[in-house]
Image (cartoon, rainbow over all chains, first blue to last red; front, top):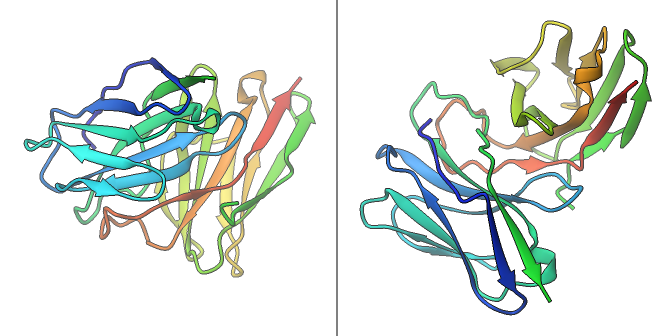
Length: 113
Length: 118
């Protein structure tokens, strides 16, 4: 799987939007971009994923660059509960690829009241 | 609540001992993954089972083994424990087989078992 690069940490104020960047310059055409987050003392949880088009769900939005070499996870209004480590992960659809997730170090998001 | 359950939540044991961690996947999920999270290594994939069969192996030590039973629950066995095995162990489940047929597959993680080896 191609690698991703994320900032180690970011800070946000409560109720403000947060843009979490991810670089994946070696992404292949068959790689989906997934985001998971891990709240303190919990297991990782799925946030969102996309292939080429921007995606929205109840948790967040995912903006994917036109060349797909980067993406941004957008939390529209950060809450204290959004303080977590956010992981950007690539998953390909090629037959024979392993199904496990490959976690990097992620971005630790702190939210200030 | 992800629907994935893990027991026990906490485990304290001594070096050289053997422990068994248990995971029940979400209803309908056939794949179970085990991950280890330590402070220095982050989240590392250990092993995957699909419908009772081993499907993929990651950085799993020979002292560790796993199996998935006909009711689809899985157990991770850790033996000859060392101090360095202290970590959080997470189980995740998914519907897909993980054969790469679906890059959209979502994995659902349990709350983890915190293992402390003294």
